[in-house]
Length: 88
Image 1 (cartoon, rainbow, N blue to C red):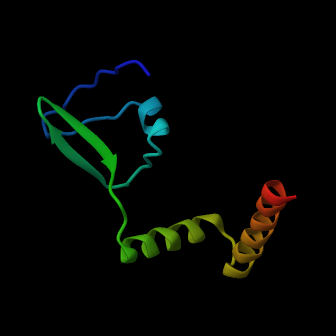
Image 2: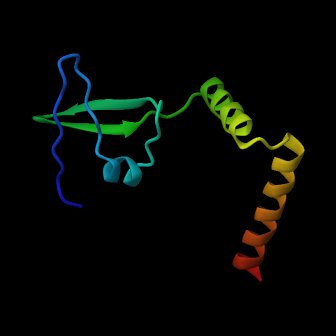
């Protein structure tokens, strides 16, 4: 992937280009870690702690409009499909 450029705004805000967000699976509101590496920086998704992960899962369920039962049924179906793909 080629390098991208972005401007840091007066309040320190930086917009990460969409192609980079997509490639890094970065979503709106997601917390990232910024790691100094010599003259460069590395931006990486922050690993979710258990309580944060629970909050994110609740948000996803709420946005989906599905009940927990419907979600679990869909998960069971997806697991069955994956098992069949992998093991026949």
